[in-house]
Amino acid sequence: MGQRRVRDAVAAMTAQGRLDTRLDMAKAQSGRPVHAWYFLRVPAALLQRVGSVLTRIGEIRLAVSTVGQYNLILAVWLPTLGDVQWLETILEEKLPGVSIADRSVVLRTVKKEGHRLDARGHATGEFSRLLTNMSQPNACFE
Image 1 (cartoon, rainbow, N blue to C red):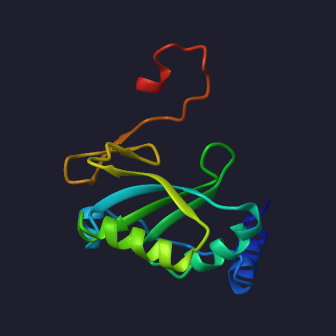
Image 2 (cartoon, rainbow, N blue to C red):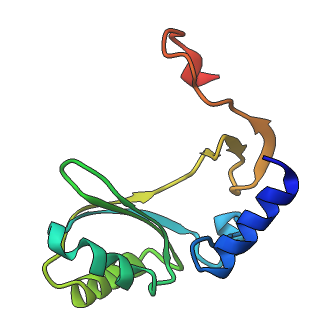
């Protein structure tokens, strides 16, 4: 596709509410340094409504519908470790019929979208390429 066609498509999808853009930053600079994952079980009949409710919870950075033991996975950024419990309470109140099957707090992120991070969560300038050849035994550690 040409640049103009891509630009027009992006503009149209944004205007229609089908595309949002976001700027990412170091968690420590966001005021929400605690990163947690929630693993939920959602009845299939509720999945659409649940998605609609989740869009109004600003702490949620990512919501992914999946197949397996948990059918909805959330990545969240929170101000304090105590807010993990607070968010669980909010999810339970706003989403009756949905169960939080598991949760995990991330102690340190070492890589984000391929960019290696330092102890403060800032990009180091090093980049790890996407693993494309599973036959290379140590390719995922490059």
